[in-house]
Amino acid sequence: MQAFETIQPPNADKALEWITALAADAIPYRLVKAGEDWQIQVPPHFGEKARETIQEYEDVNVGWPPQQTRWAESTSLAHPLWSGLWGAAFIIMVFFCFGEYDGNNSHLRAGASDSVAIKEGQWWRPITALTLHAGFDHLAGNAVFLTILGGVVCRNLGIGLGWALIVLSGIAGNTLVAFASRDAPHVAVGASTACFGALGIAAMYQALENFRQFGGWKSVWSRAWIPLCGGIALLGFSGTHPGSDIAAHAAGFLCGLLVVLPFAIPRPRPCSEWGEAALKVGTVVLIMFAWRAAIQFAQQT
Image (cartoon, rainbow, N blue to C red):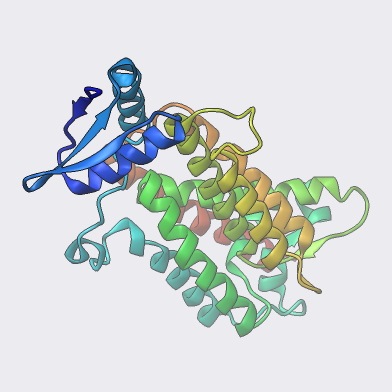
């Protein structure tokens, strides 16, 4: 009778996981009941290979599945998952202060992303345009987008750094479109450039996290490609409707992919409490100074 080498899983769930790993590696096994426990038995000449396969499986899947966030923590408005609400609340507040965009209103016209004016040095326009919207439907869509994706980005990077990068991606996207338009005038308003910037940030961050955990960019089946492909698919699905500013959406997504790289290529580390506070205040102050410049310009013209 052939003797078998016994491997003792810590519990029944691990037994199922380990025999799946063994089967995938073409290692023969049998699962037997020993009292209240399960045991995995393999032929002696497969013993070492079986243990190596199980160890490799455990190394690859360390920390998986992730522990769920406790509901008491996630329901706090200070929790990063809910921080997207603050960005949505901000653009809603601006909408109710200024109303929907009207090109005949000198103050609102001074805040729009005007490619000709930006190239002439009106630096504030790529910033202020992110807070203006053409109507309530336009505002509502962007508010929902910011609530969801803003929360995802802030959960990964922290609230201060997350919002700073989202706003930066929107500014960079508007600026890129302005300079790419050459002599053709391009006027736009809306937070959607920053929304798709947040999508790019989330996609690139998760792609790099998957690469660190699972490795490999060479295979088309690598899990590292899944977030990027998903982000591109969502950009195509929600950012190319008739009448939408496709160029700004694509530019925001591209800039989002790029601005997160310095913070996501090395293993991400949380900002200090002071750093988080400085980024939060700095982002708000930048928008306020941009609007101050826009209002002064409108009053002078």
